[in-house]
Image (cartoon, rainbow over all chains, first blue to last red; front, side):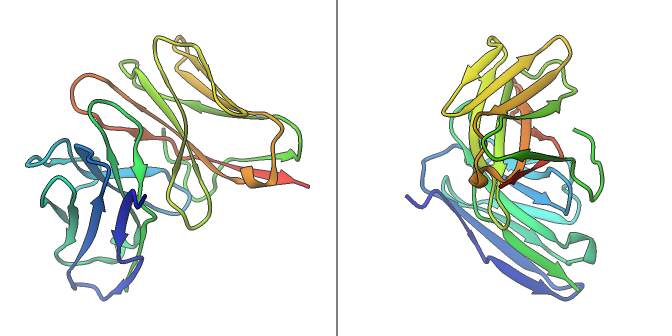
Length: 112
Length: 113
């Protein structure tokens, strides 16, 4: 069982560069999420998609865009990376209604 | 939960002892609560959940207690083992409307041999 798969695992960017973080789940879940985790802090919600075709802002959406490509895939794009976006990014998914989140293994991003 | 900056609260327990990790939530409308375990370099893993119509729920070696009056959640781990060393997060959400899980900052559990 793959669960939630994130790519890449590590990435280093220069300020101003753009990149897309990919996430895919094989559990037929409706909802998908992007979180960031900074040292010593909890997970903060960037964007989420309650169902295919919908996306909404979370707590910290500035500087990011998302695409719910289909039911399986939810990507996060940084158009012009900034050092403040250095963080570990986690994708998660959940089924119908309020259910536990299943997390990917994370992407460690450094912006120099 | 509120950010406490770079330093996570740490709980150190002797191997074999019971551990109790506490969490406060702020939204009185929350009616679903989860505990996650995160090992270094990995994504959070689900441990146990509880809905607001319950006060207590037990799993394998873990028990979650919910006190809605004071908006407090606790995770009890019985016979703590070295493999339990990790950061533990609680999260709360509402079953109506849009589902946004709010995570606490976490507690680091260190198991002493």
